[in-house]
Image (cartoon, rainbow, N blue to C red; front, side):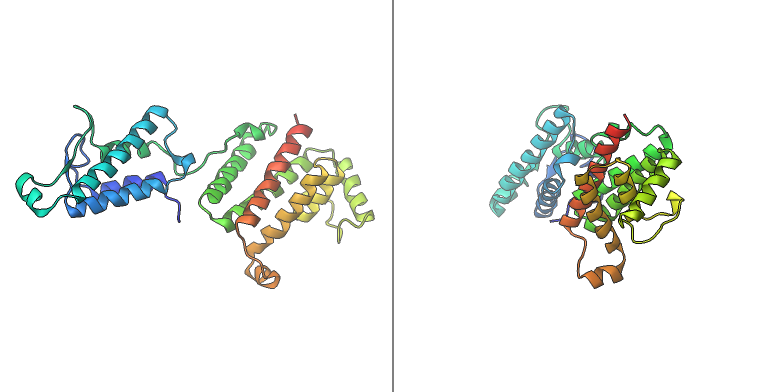
Length: 274
């Protein structure tokens, strides 16, 4: 089942319900067409992930109450027969109290306040970065990959998380003295941890080389090194030829593994760069 974001709820209401029905306390006549539209609205709300629902407790409570009012009212309307409709007209969806908006308006206003993306839960994770521009860029990437995870966009979540790992390790390496980095590079070559000499400029290295040199520098621990290695392999699946050759695709497992690597690298750097 696909995830629905708040802006889709707002767009659906604006497109489906008339201006009068969206205007506030105006009751909505529950004809068969309107019952179908309201059933669809409830189904869409049910598909919004929990983390994207209103965070304000009062707004959330009102939104939930409105959804249940719609469910109840539609059920009542669907039980009407032709005789009842002829005598009393269609059942109406009304505000639950005087001077209160109808349930559709309450739902629209609640979701209009909600973002479509998941912001990083712990933005202080990158507080060790003093360069605000670099930090802000990585926080945006974190938001993007977490949103991709939420919406089951496995390839985006895998690849972006891999790029975060690469950016974090490059940042960490550039914070070290060049003589220490050079010593670590030479040690990796001596121990055959690198398949070839990447040269002395870290900006020209690839993710595999960042991982090995960072580990040699003591920037990341053994568990993180292993997890980052998985992120490296999965990130390469962005290339169709590589994915075909390896007979592997990006899925929930690759996305979670790559994001775990990013979280572990952030954890280690937070300790090394307090």
